Length: 403
Image (cartoon, rainbow, N blue to C red; front, side, top):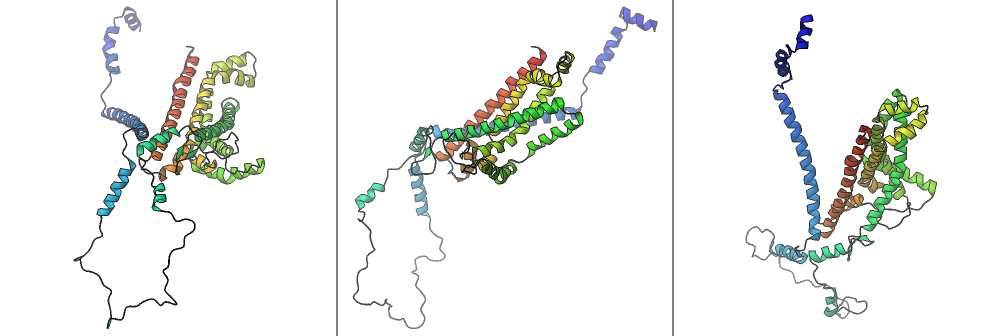
């Protein structure tokens, strides 16, 4: 013992122990670890690649709306008609023979319809003046090319009318943006207070056993399909709120906002509870040690400390509501109106894509406008998520690290 202490003090054994330690710390080659590492890297790379390809596809389908050298629509129609003329039905045998109906026995005299009285030349009835060929020329409009249609669509993007299927189509996005913001504001005003208060109770006041029940139960709501929440809003919430408030339109922005709040509550609750739980325990211990009550500690110490994380949770909840489609289709009434009344029917951006994408012609102006709406949705939600993830979450980390 004394010899080892002496060797340690003199450093004689250090040189002998260094090779043994280095051999233990040396990374050994294991084929399973290498394969697992490559698989994880490949999956991560493919995931990022697929997301990037989706974004590229959405923007690529939007570009023809702003492209100047599109093909005229008339030429496409002419080519289609020309192709139809060249098609002939299949015939078997010589097709030059004239087909005659079969006769049995001697050929009978030619049958004529019976007439009563003097024969008169029948003419179709007309009402008003008969249109002459000159008048008919009024309806022979000049052919509209795809470029002209796109330019007309771009000029109507800031109008107040969304009428994509009409003689004079208009693609005004203002009622769609207004309806989306109206539903989002109603949903967040309802979801954020409930989710934050529930998270405060779960993280600070609830007993540990009750906390183990409440948190999974609320997070389970996040796994509910949107169509189920939409059915609930369509059949239950719409009738209930109409009986309470007495408005005329059964499906409106208020019903849609409340239904979307049910989808946003789990997102805000989970992230808020995580932000409160990540506050160092020394904050609570110091506050209670100075004589503050648990309520004062919760609302005056822990809640301000977790504010950036809570704000990030609210922003992610806004992104969840902004891109929701199925609930918007089933609970908002789908009427593109410009009105600030929350009890009027609205139409959101995502619901417009979901309702009309299956009915448009591929490559048409309406098709490109729908992809333009999808691009705007992507830019908005991506900005919100990036802001919440990279800015506010970093602020939480820096605050707790004292930087």
